[in-house]
Image (cartoon, rainbow, N blue to C red; front, top):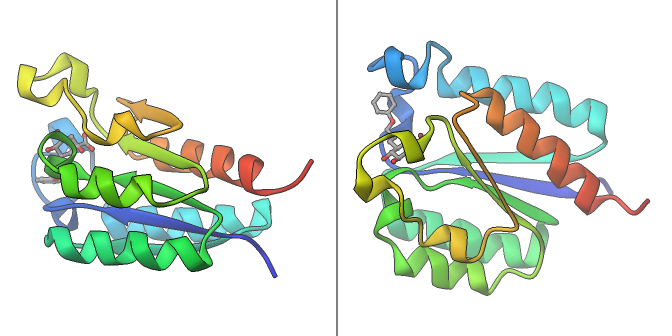
Length: 147
Ligand code: CA2
């Protein structure tokens, strides 16, 4: 069985590629999903990809990952800056957690500079556009696959 990497996306990311391309680019979330599925084949892992605008759904998927996934990649979107509940859920997951932000949050408003999720994340990528997801998947595959 190939290791499974869960990729989670938070609120409003369903609008990716459809609004604010100057910040988030032109690729849609379906494009990102397709890119990751293709890359996963090369890397010898499986990707389970989700997006939700509801905090509890993201938490439920993190709980599911506890039993079934080797790593989590998460772009928590605005929940990054607000959600102790997502941090608590991630703290119950034993494998690697990689945090992705499409934009460089450190170049933006001060409220985006703090991340609850970074208190748990083993790695953080910000400002690489949607390419950040592929970079995170390469890292997750490396961490999930024995040398
Ligand atoms: O840069 C990122 O990936 C963010 O996680 C995106 C969040 C933002 O709240 C974080 O501070 C940084 C916002 C996601 C909203 O996504 C949209 C995409 C296209 C159009 C409108 C919103």
